[in-house]
Image (cartoon, one colour):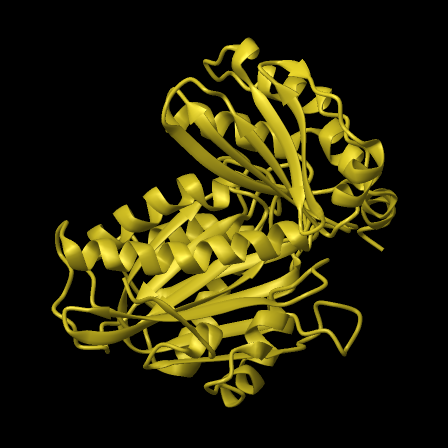
Length: 405
């Protein structure tokens, strides 16, 4: 499959424009807080949401709006989650109605999302006053939108690829926000993906639902699953490929392109974890099933003890086995091999469940790099998986100790 990384982010695909502005939700006027993504044509739409039973009002409204499988625009604010507010649904519906009226489209074709502080009323008038400027700012540069969805994020997260489907060149790009309250079962994240490929709403939903199992459900920063998590894909068909309506070669190519973008966004989210200094990648092979491998990988990257050991460049491999042991996976502890690896080298620390002699100095060098791999072989089958996380640092506590201020 010839999948190539290209520039353009959320606007790489034909027929999409985006914008991001400051409307007044955030105190700092230099920080954007309102984003809009618009498709020239109505698009197939699929979404997945947090499994937290406390859900933000925007998720409730979005789910209703895209029940028919189509949408044309996405509006998102940062700085306020619009969650646990008595008028939350009314405000979320109002955001859809206001932007729809300004664009001349149906409110039912608008996806709405919010991220930020939970339990703080969101003033619809602040957003309404910003919509004219937001629409006027629409263009083919998605950087503004990528910035406007950020909260505690340090870096913008965006990626795009091109691929051939049905003899036509298609493009797919995405932006994401996510830095804290990141954990499997949908992390605290917002991800918006656009493509000009033609694909039915049903097949788009299947592709996205399968993708999150190995993508966004395999990252963890701090073990908290938030209330507003949402991944949305719009596919407007403007590449003019034959519409994908069933399994087949074109569908597999589409899934591969989607997976390329989402996996890279996963890495960026994990690497940008609140206070993080290191990306942790845990690769597991030799599991009885892929499900077992996923359980081990995501439990290891979620372990506070593993994360703090990586922060301190301490090759405390016993913490890795400990986490694997309570993951719920079916595995034999006397078959497990563990190694730590980075650009500085690889250090094998455990064989068949028992420690190996190794150089603490070499291990310190390996674990002092900014991208660390924890390699686990369960030596029991063919199942494999990969999960992403980050180290746990003093700054995580500082950032979250005064988050509302």
